[in-house]
Image (cartoon, rainbow, N blue to C red; front, side, top):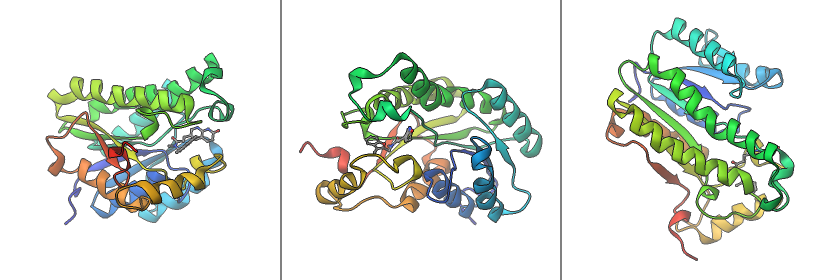
Length: 256
Ligand code: 0WE
């Protein structure tokens, strides 16, 4: 009997088998949850279908561009019809235009700033609001963040500002939804070797830096993010809301 038995959830942000969202979906599934998935764009449909259907050929898989209100309304309409209720929501979605993650932060355009905040931060507010009517017995919303939200990580740039907004949104949502027993938390993960990290200049050096300098002297495994998200989804975390939980081999405590 898993600790998420009888719970139903929706996962935003699977792109491929290396996605953090996929690691968390597997952990939630193994803990007994029934899951629906969304995918961003036709390009990713097959990938997500192939993965999600390992949980059963009847798995609900829906297109969703989180920057479109109509897509979000359609997804939650269909999830409501299929599930009747919802307990778990994973937000593992971020985007900033590539150029904005390369040069100086001071060069960030108004449009890059807008897109990064719309896709990476406002989307949490939009999908959480749409989930509230389905979370009749309370629920757990989990969003993914990164250390660049609180300290300068060279070239993370506007994504750092958007993750700071995401973490602040988490606190305000937690306050609003606490009376409905809906909890909202972030997991701040150490750097992971995902599609989103591919091609980022100096990324393998970043992994080596964590190995050398984090208290645990290693990087984080995807299944460790899954285990934390499973805890946050479970009744063991019933009094935890509005928090940023660091799953980063301890890196965040260091001053040097
Ligand atoms: O949040 C992220 C990355 C999210 C991301 C990645 C991309 C790459 C492709 C958002 N938008 C885009 N846009 C693209 O066009 N991380 C925590 C991973 C990451 O990204 C970095 C990092 C780390 C760590 C970028 C610069 C420096 C460090």
